[in-house]
Length: 484
Image (cartoon, rainbow, N blue to C red; front, top):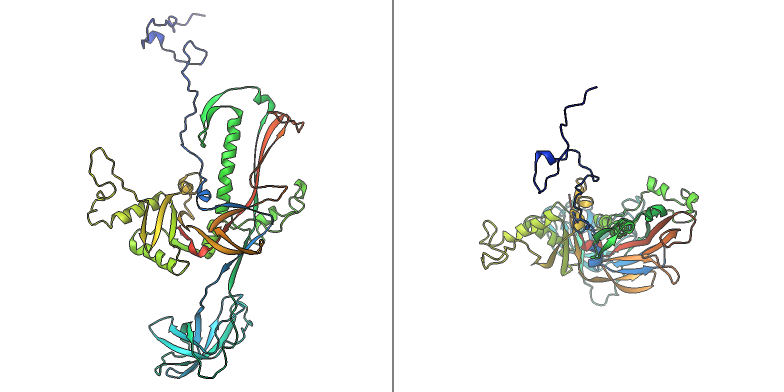
């Protein structure tokens, strides 16, 4: 066979760094005469990748030695009933009997003879003041989902206007008794609200076999906590630790209790895990995270308030709750921009949005278009929450998107049923399982026969992580969740 005509000659290296046709390598490999330049340092293409830090800013951690955490929160000092119904007495009658429908599970009533009350129609402008002549009757629980009781009043005004079936509200504003009469009958007990939560066990692990540990290849890295150095197999262990740290917080934010009959309840039952040592344990699963609690018994704003009028509805709701003076709003980027634009619009010279921030108009000075906080009735401080922006976490959620969370600052006093006394606690705090002999706040240990471990016959090093904890959301009525 004939010799091929191409290539007609061997490649000739050039004496200088010249891009010529005769020294172009079409099939480049590391074994060729020119090797690539390499960077030892790992490039941080996503910056600081951790999303934790929220609970460290607003809460605290404290030990607990029980499977169940219980506390009591104060109820309202004054009583108002919103769902009452006028009886058959015609409008203009001087006396009326009202029927009160209570929430499911209610066991007490608070209206007594001699109390003075204001009654107002739920629809319209009708209102009257009256004195209770016959106190509240015993609660009728024949309909458990809507127990009822009745009470009778006589009006101070002569022109009482409530027709039969009028839906009304009533609240007590005082009392009045004739001279020489006996004292008020009955007494009122403090109405506490009792809440509870249970800790969950979180685990993670990282392993590397002994053979791979012998093939050392170093890379210079800078970790999220600022440490710089050369790592190889421990780099993945370090990232596992950072990931576990994030889960310790995000689990407290996102946790939900397992519903009765759910698959999660079956999967986490002691019987289902008996083959792996789970022969004992709780018969329930899950926990009450911050989002779940605030959505259940806190305040919810649909979307993002973009005007002062919308934000005023938030403030008016806070007026009806604990009226906490200082609040922090943890927001995503959309919410942060909306607050900046809302506040900038209040500037009479702000057409175009460039007359706020740094006002010197110095060409060497950047214009600050952001706000850290403002006061309107209460003090509000704005803080970006990376968890809501991270595309691999809440930032990538479309359905059920959360735009922000308003958290009251400071602490509150509750009755701790485990301690048996009143205690001051941050509105948000974490309780972890611990005793004199076992601390489960953050456990880590190494097993295997490589990397310094000598407690197993298996040819690898395994790093284990474990924590058992729950978050307590006190005074959820003072929180606001902003979600779609």
